[in-house]
Image (cartoon, rainbow, N blue to C red; front, side, top):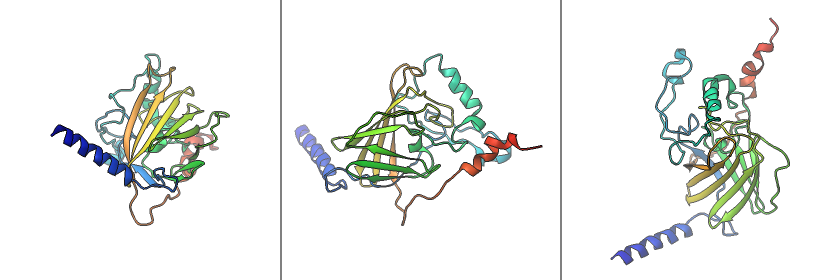
Length: 254
């Protein structure tokens, strides 16, 4: 009986792999518009519902509760690095790079409350994000070292079976991981994994390593959902003009 159940399970896995949408080269086809459906953009760790920064906004400015996406529950900060996270959180209304319309970095761009589009080729894969028109190219064949530090880093990709693995280096350390002030330095190394589980879902994982901020590597994981509405597409969210008062308001002549 047990042998039969194992055989049935293996058969189901094989059938699922065969029914994934694929490109002519046999690789899973990740092309499409995707989005995270979680509150990780507020805080990637477990968190309860909280009031917003301005009581005048009432419930519309409140922070929704979330179970978090950090495997194991807590980020392993080094003791000397934790005060910076707490400072970030206290000053998030003016210091969060998202509020300033800076490019969100990796992995934060993946779970912002905005869709992103994957355009998959054989030599390269392009990911375009709606927020701040950020984008990056994943080099699939001709891997290169990061020439300098960038907001979105430098991405080299490879396939491990049906999983796209992306090695991200060259991040400038200026982006945050969420609105709660979680952060990494410019020594961070991120390894992403995109696994298509069926035609409309990607299981996303990212392992984050930064010995200057964390005691050991740690991982986040969450599902991504294909946008299914008719004519799904990225729209413009060029937010620079929305951030001008925050960035330059103090320079206005009195």
